[in-house]
Amino acid sequence: MDINFRQGNPLEITSDCLIVGIFEGEEFSSDLLNEANQAFDNSLEDLNSQGELVGKTGNSTLIHTLGKSSPIRLLFVGLGKRDAMTEKAVTEVLGASFRKARSIGASIVAIAVDTFCTEEIKAERIVELVTLSAINGLYRYEDHISEKSDKAISEVLIIMEIPAEVNVSSYTAIADAINLARDLANAPANHMTPTILAGVAEREAQENNLGFELIDEDKMKEFGMGSLLGVAQGSIEPAYMIVMKYEGDKDNPNDSIALIGKGITFDSGGLSLKPPIGMTTMKGDMAGGAAVIGALTAIAKLNLNINVYGIVAATENMPGGQAQRPGDVVTAMNGTTIEVLNTDAEGRLVLADALCYANHLGVNKIVDVATLTGAIRTALGDEIIGAFGNNDELIQNVIDAGSKEGERLWELPADESFAKNFKSDVADIKNVAGAAGGATIGAMVIGKFAEDTPWVHLDIAAVSRTNSVNGNNVKGATGTPVKTLVSLCRSLAK
Ligand code: BES
Ligand code: MN
Ligand code: ZN
Image (tube, rainbow, N blue to C red; front, top):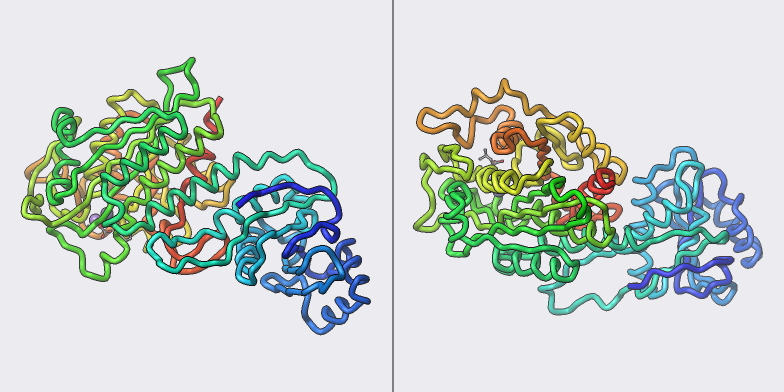
């Protein structure tokens, strides 16, 4: 799909469908609507008086122009009250509009940008949101469907009457990164093993000029990554620690951030086996790793002045004959011993060694992203990311970075008062500690391995997939929090 700019009157530019925004209560105050109304001998006003073509949120009216204007169809979409319009609301309208245009077979879809602008949300931002909606709102995962959809939008025309210098390429990079992360997390586990995930990361590293290194199980043994290896030993699939490196600030090689992703390509629970229903979505237990890989591609394309490592601890969590047993004690790379009382709390185990490795690389900041706990959904619902950390400034930076891009985060405690809960009788710590504050307990186990490095943990277990179609999300993986990670690196870059 191409995204191109046109300047001029949207009613005079040829397209299969022109999307026009209308605000509630001011339907006929825009030039565009008045001109269209005239072309149709004032019949649009009649429609309006019958309750169609109104600016109420969620309203949409499709009109076939039958030769009366250059677009073959006009899709009028309600934006609600002008003062109340938010970026979230625009995104919901845009995503739905693009999908509607595609469903009626439109190939060239135009959008009258000026009809969406308010005092608060200016044309430049609308163009960015249009770019995201065109790429992410139209996303489909059809890799394993024999009869692929035949309807597709080939070109989006961004029409503005007054030319604005807008560079969409950074938002196409971000939107593509989100779709990449979705592809990885939507892929069935037999099509997305640690080996395949590592292969995709290597391809993306090559295409984006990133450094790339794979730590295989032999090297993990040399590093003493017993915690990651303990999870991996139940599977016949080899595990990998995937390391990507973007060097955008070559003058300050000692200044870097690590983005670390949980990369469990399938989480059966291990010997602490999950019930069947809980396993059905566990191909997506590498969504954190997928977001990290996606974010690194966008960061590279944006050419940010910052050094970023992307580290993904990739393995299956399986109950094979070699699987670790509840009660086993493993030793992580920093020497900490962990009693594995529940093999289904494996995310913190693989992340432990990933954080140790980041510290071994000498990074100054760590942000880990993981589908870590079911408890986070109980705490925050399914739209908000749980944020934990050991450094108030970095936590705030991450939360702000997300909210700028419409990804909501909420801080939960990683308070030392919880530490007594995971004291073990036989090792330094245990990997689980009862049901209370489950998301915090998981976060704090990971935090042990951050040591003194400023660290933030994002629990995305509730937001990484969705069952509904809304805004730029469709059923399946959401690609969250690619936008937060890229936005964070943008804000930290010099
Ligand atoms: N991958 C799961 C968490 C999860 C649950 C992600 C639901 C997405 C949807 C994680 O490995 C897990 O199993 N966590 C356990 C931890 C418990 C054993 C302490 C959980 O949340 O039940
Ligand atoms: Mn698990
Ligand atoms: Zn898991």
